[in-house]
Image 1 (cartoon, rainbow, N blue to C red):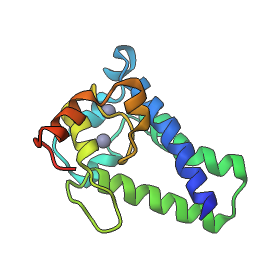
Image 2 (cartoon, rainbow, N blue to C red):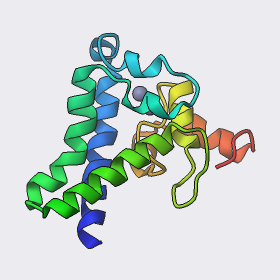
Image 3 (cartoon, helix red, strand yellow):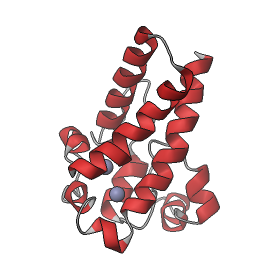
Image 4 (cartoon, helix red, strand yellow):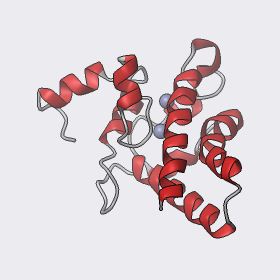
Length: 145
Ligand SMILES: [Zn+2]
Ligand SMILES: [Zn+2]
């Protein structure tokens, strides 16, 4: 379990910065814009990505912790299954048991300059000031978390 939490930290850090990187004007138009064609939540849109975005922005952050620890096959299977389910949930539009609310990523699809962190993990967005509008809408009661 501790190992999975380390993978989680590793993925969350890299994924947030990589998502931000794919929003740079020179990359976004050619890569990540594909994923943002979906402005409303549909679970399968989590896998609708430009190949570069899929490889560098999605597979690399999920795999880096496994590569660094040379983990057991079962651990890898468990981690990839969890990551895929989490990504599907983030794009489902539903608040499902055992998963955090997808409202943060829904907001990212609506306002592509906000909430780069995956899942409900937002410290990096807080540090970079990339969730100010999101937090203001939560505080005003316009969004429920
Ligand atoms: Zn998305
Ligand atoms: Zn995005």
